[in-house]
Image 1 (cartoon, rainbow, N blue to C red):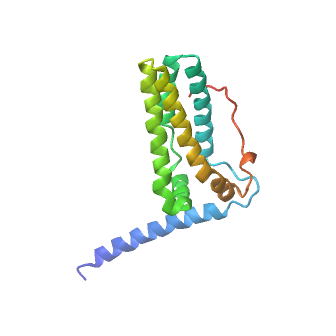
Image 2: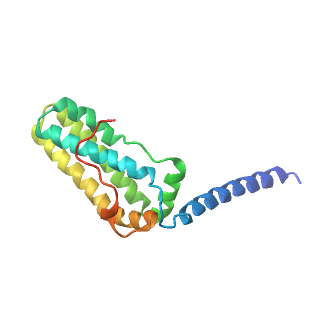
Length: 170
């Protein structure tokens, strides 16, 4: 009887975990292919796309203060809400370390672009931008199509809303 409180605490914890899993599962199964609301991740990616275009334009115009201002917006981009993050992690599964590595690579290279811009290093900024773009492309090549298929019940990646090259910096 002296361990009764431990068993009660375990039951409460297991109940909370079960409830969280049930919530995540029901949210995933609720996607029936009609009017599926977009993930917050989509808006985050659209913002990053805008900022990548702005950065590319700024590099080509050698507008180093703008490049410096945009770099942290890409490196330290917003994160999806907790529940959505849990859904994404459940979907990515055993590839989560690879998914996080891509995100880390994007952050690292965006910071490097900003650092090169700060020192007016044209070749360095251009090289780091190309490396940053390659990091984005690698992640998209591996995860974008399965994400769209899973979360939007569509195999057409091109059906997603696109963002134009021009846009406001957040």
